[in-house]
Image (cartoon, rainbow, N blue to C red; front, side, top):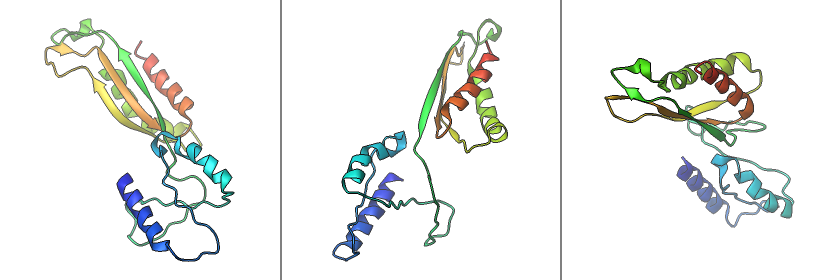
Length: 171
């Protein structure tokens, strides 16, 4: 992914070396893009150089090689995320009724995430589950702890509210 982006940009910079464009060209290898801090780090240079136009490049799987797609506005925007940890009640696997296993609330979040985003919210919202952990590989113990981590791009507070509503059903 990122190595490919960097390699293509580096090759593009090499290809333009020595050519005249009537203006300065800057090739920006944006740092920290995946955590939403890259553009912020670049702002000082953009202001200093009075850069008025920015063109970005991103590969898009599923489109024919060699085609150029144009999109005005944000694209493949940076992410933020959240993790929810559940501390419930571990028990012997033979007596699950004596414990509270977080697997069920986490599974419910997984199953409902796509539906409530698409059905209830009218602005672009995207959330991606990036990791789920529940208990340990111990066949004699029903899990008492669990964690779900979601990467989300926009409207983080709204997504967290919805996840908390699901969690409240299991209290």
